[in-house]
Length: 295
Image 1 (tube, helix red, strand yellow):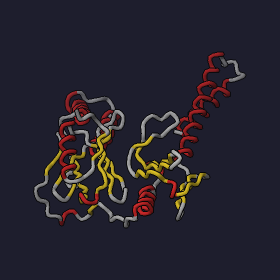
Image 2 (tube, helix red, strand yellow; image 1 turned 90 degrees about the horizontal axis):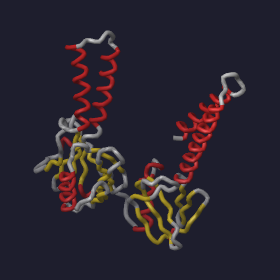
Image 3 (tube, rainbow, N blue to C red; image 1 turned 135 degrees about the vertical axis):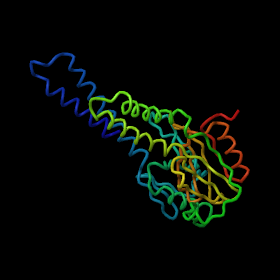
Image 4 (tube, one colour; image 1 turned 135 degrees about the horizontal axis):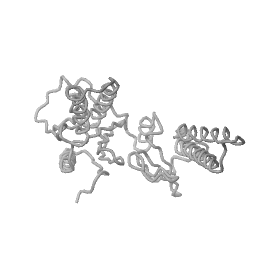
């Protein structure tokens, strides 16, 4: 956003000064200066937002510092290692992270998307406050050796839904021009082929479905049927159902070592999500539903 808004603002301002003082300059061109200045201010706003929400965090034996602000760990009243917390400064959508609430009411946030080593920091904090040992990695790489018995699937139809229909429309347009109304130039075929490939990959990574046994949680791909991720239920810290704006519902899986994976599942209906939630809770997995009402 800094590069986009700031770069566009500089471009518009330079365009204004290129016209200023020339015969082509008009009073309406002052609007370019206003727009460019607004874009620059917006870019600076996002830059300040970044530094405000991503200070350098240093964890010491008895204290933690966020930028230049240092706090004693003994003054932490509540430690929340998962959850959605307000990003602040006009950004209404909360983001996943951790929260340290101190005895004087001060809250300090550690947003997951701002720190590449956020999971390691969470593990260290948990060990400091709860005297736990380091958790093992939760994902099972060599899943082909597993004996899968009684896997229950939670899935939808990958071919009959809104997003899939867009791919069928692109394929239909390609076949229409190929077989019925050939175009004068091959650019149409190239455009439709590239668009179809891009949209296919959008579908691949937005149409996961899930499987569950008494010991394992499976994440499958509708279109890459040979590919899947496998987690032991005992190593799952929490599962979160999310609704990111206009995008499809997705599942955020948080492991015991606070690694996070996000799996969009646009083919699942609400009743299927609720069925999955009930099944996971029966297996002792904590589920946080932030996507839809359950009434």
